[in-house]
Image (tube, rainbow, N blue to C red):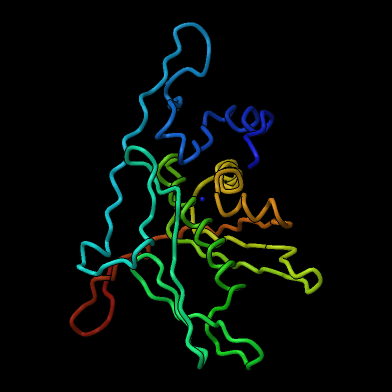
Length: 236
C-alpha cells in the first residue's frame, strides 16, 4: 500500500464533488460516505462498508504448496492481507532466489563480484515502490472511476554509503488518459496518501515525483471501400 489526511487537501479537492480514496483497511473496519450522499448536516447517511471478494491463494489452487510460514496473514473478514512473507535462499556458489507469492524470483545476493544483471536489493525496493503506485492506480480506477488506457512508471532510488541508507526516491508516472487536469491532480494526491509502501519509504527518505499524461489516441478511420481495380472510387 503514517501521515493522515490533511484537512486542507480534502476541502480543496472535494469541492469538485470527487471523494478522496478511502484507505484500503478502512473498508473492512469503518463506514465511509459515498459520492452521492450528503457530506454533513441533518439527515446525512453513511453507506454500508463495501464488500470485497476474498483473495484466493493461487498457489494452492494450482497445487503448488507454499513454504511453511510464508502464508500471508489476512485481517478479519475479507480485507487485504496485513502481513507479507517471502523466503530467500542462496548457495555457496552465489546463486540466490526468493519465493514470493506463487513465483520464484532470481536475485543478486553476491558480494564483491561483477554485476550479474539480476535484481538486487535496490532494484527490488524500487520495484516494490512501482508496484505500490500501479496498485493504487487500479484502486483509483475502481473508487474514483478514473479512466485510463495504460500506464508506466519509472522509479529511481538513490543511496549513500555512510551511513548506508537510501536517501531519495523519485518517480515519473505516465498515463494515457482523457481525464481533465483536476482529476489527475486528485489521482496523484490519492497515490501519495494511500500507498503503504509509499508512506513507509516517505517516512525514511525524500520521496517525490510527477504524473505526466498524454491524450487517448483517436480511433483510426475505417478502411475505404476500394474498387476491384485497386483505386478508391468514393465520390468527391
